[in-house]
Image (cartoon, rainbow, N blue to C red; front, side, top):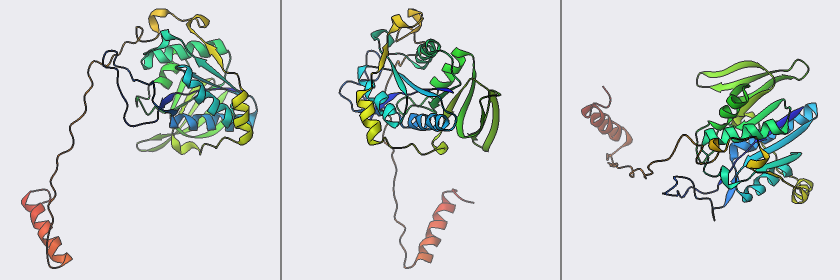
Length: 266
């Protein structure tokens, strides 16, 4: 069994700064973490490997500092990690990111499953995982909360998807891409041995020259979507009125009368 996990390193702060000229995130000097949703993807891949054997490869696209995110994945138990690092990749939107990651996955070779978190907390689009599946022309199973059955001999997988009405059971052929939600598992903590192995691990680095990519389809120049304007929403305005009364019952009566007068209730 060969599983590939696509992860992203994201800013560990709510005060994200934007480059006004490029309309992209400024990551220099900002503490970063593994995208929380991606840790569930890593955990699920490791659980599948523990059950069926095989190999788990973790891949990300980003600056050199993203190596720390890959080493965290190795500390959790991943077998190998690949960093896509090139100035030509910078500024990519979700389409260009999915295109580049799909080219790297093709270079890796045959696989059974690709795992992704449902979305990244910095962009919140949830588009990269499905975009990778589209580029590779494989099935995508999104918002997965449980792997119900995996049959590597028959090349099939059955999952439960979290949907608004409840849960949906879906069956697909392999290979396919799975995006997971937090309900699927509880990510493990890296062990001491895992941390020591990660410190010694050599991260494979691929540039644009290592991949069969069209230079017009990667990075900022290959991104069909652009941030044209950024603004901070105004603070919420509101008023608070204290309902007074000699008892809770009297306060409730006053409140009911006010709600009726304002036609909030009828």
